[in-house]
Length: 188
Image (tube, rainbow, N blue to C red; front, side):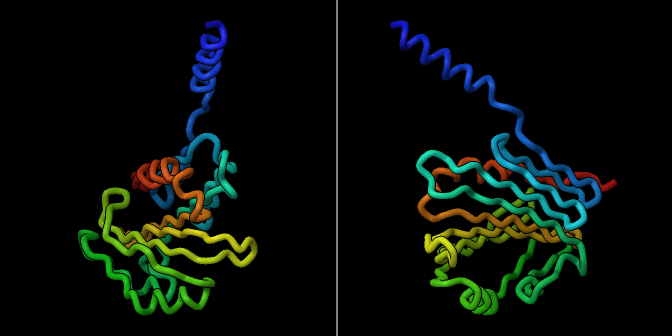
């Protein structure tokens, strides 16, 4: 009985000792995103990016990485692939020209395999979610990359997620919370 009580107290203490999540706020680019307290967060305001790296979880091969980039340069259009994203007046329309995108990704990533290309929501806006697998050039592990992209008020919001495919379930709850935490704020 004493062991059970001790275990409950230890588990309760761990829950209480969990620190506050880490919120990155960029008032110039008008966004806020929150990462779990255990993640290492790097913010690069001049580049309009925030990056979170998870610790390697129990049973995982590697950690996960989530990068948010907010760009208002050239109306948020900065690469050949992204030139195919259209910002309508109400941000209701996003176009992604699959043939160009897939051709470029096949050249970059070894054993590229598209697994998802859907319309979704990001920060309350219509968005695209695009997921693919590839073989990592240094680890030879199969990786999963997921991009969420939306354009609103001439700003491109891009969240890129990178993790070993085999570790997806381990990090999915944290990653979903991070993606859902993105919100636009008033620009100062």
